Length: 188
Image (cartoon, rainbow, N blue to C red):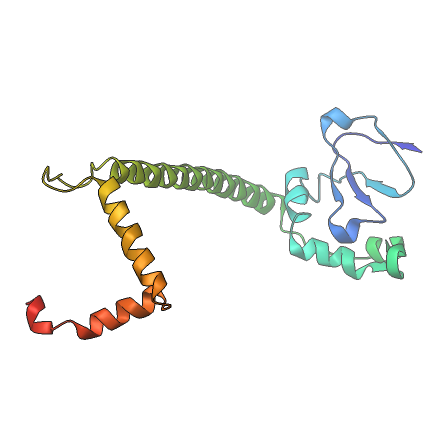
């Protein structure tokens, strides 16, 4: 068992190939880990913590872990020699700060847009419900007091359906036959 410090980079020898790595947060300072986890102190002269954190969340870094893992079936593990001998070209500290700054700006905008999309999708759902309610209440079009009530129309539809069902033909077939027999000049 080992004690870790906040700000260290930690990864799982067993699950690094599945993305099990990251920076130890303040709330886990002095946490205890087993030897299945590896911890590294970060050399701030070569890499800033935020840049390493973002870099470790990329497909590039994940592929490094996958390529440095060996084993069979459920015993695939990150190989320490392979992993620690990997070389990664790093931008200068100034460039890392600039990348982190741009990433934070992008992430903020992305989160705002995602939130706005969620809000708009919810508004669309509510609008659809509202339109349906208005349609049911007859508020979408001007109502003609001479129109028969919907209950009467439903009775007629039911009667008509029963007649059609007795003929043995589907409603769709009968409608097609009726459409074929309509005189187009009557429609004009």
